[in-house]
Image (cartoon, helix red, strand yellow):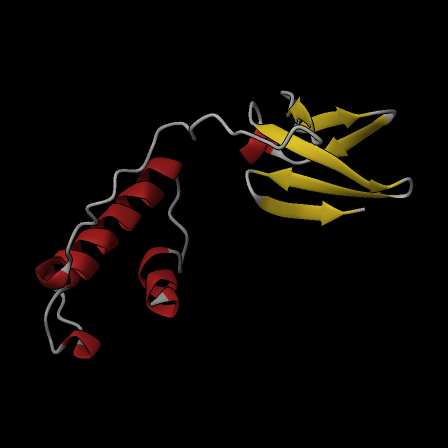
Length: 120
């Protein structure tokens, strides 16, 4: 798929962003709606696609951390402060709450929801 995408849309690259986007849009329509795929028994992806019944939330629900976890909000620069340290999380977590759990004097677990992101 990626080789075909590259050949049909990027070789050679279009002369403007608008033209490049139009090439991608044409490819997407042909690839998903018009062109049969051998792996799909010569059907198009559109013919076999079943939308998920799950609703994707616009914002993740408020996260509840255990009382022993220090909670900080990731700032606009992608960082959160923990004691004297500034930890970089990146733009995907801006505005989200992360948790810091001091395991020992020299060991800390960093959480996002119930997932441990780092141990440092």
